[in-house]
Length: 63
Image (cartoon, rainbow, N blue to C red; front, side):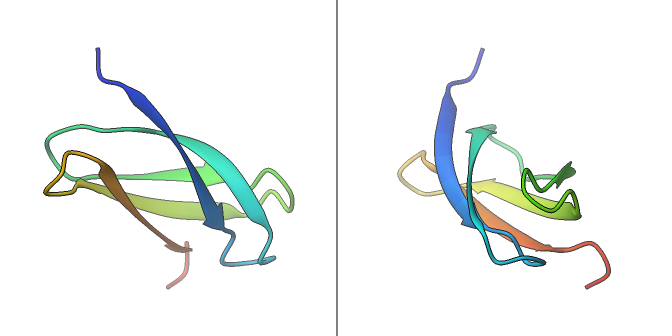
């Protein structure tokens, strides 16, 4: 099982900083998770960085 990393992101809708758990996998992954504050769908793109830590990008669903 891969390790979970806590990361703080900024919601692309309401701008609130929220903490999320990211699972670092070797391949790129993309998934949708609702904002904990405004409930809007956030698209997460997660890749593995050169140091093994996950790199996270977020965007609005309609972008």
